[in-house]
Length: 162
Length: 136
Image 1: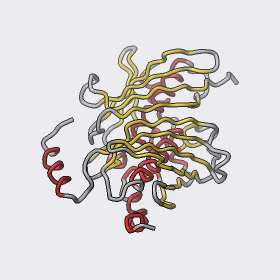
Image 2: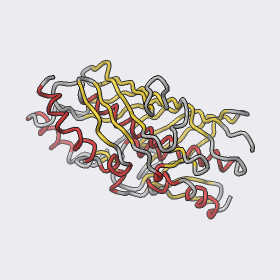
Image 3: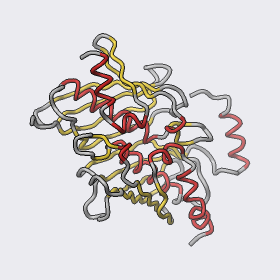
Image 4: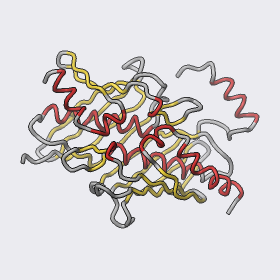
């Protein structure tokens, strides 16, 4: 395991818990590896989308997949890059089982200078019986964090509006 | 539909309540509001709204619009959705409006636009297919 991946393992729980919205819905860090990220979302009645079936909302699964894809994209580089979701395609194969934890496993299979390409699957125990599958593109929004180039960009951006 | 019915529709979804979503009806114009809440932030250092929160907001918007068209039916279910992120979601109020492109017997195609200060500057767009519920 590279030093960077080791660092991401240490940062993992904070990377998820430190994100207010991930924390709000109860997302948990599971694992990280080169170009891979796994997260979980325990069942939570605050996430119910259909009160009749008590199934969690598609939006909660979307959020879990988005976060897992972002983690896989981050882990695909050798240093910490600032990233942002550009596009997210989600296909819902079935309803998540009420009461079950949803797990999202993402793989970043290709990176270019500006874009990371990721696919992910959300399931509730058996990856061969997915709840949803996702395909995402993330934009690399600047130079690696902590570099002198990144500080210059930050200074420029602070005056920018949109 | 009345403003009261629009509010009840959103209040019946616990997930919409978690995001803080509100419904607005102005004449025939129906749209949703996502007030700024720190709990919807994805990147605290920028700061920016979580892409998932914006995506979930637009999904709720699409489903609410379908429900508004078929008030006697239960909620439709998303089949496949595409979300494009166009601008950073700033820590301010966000709006979303849905348009039903096609409504068939089983499936509807819906587009949603989310914006903040100006409707001409969308921050995200969703297009997707939703499975319409069968009458019970």
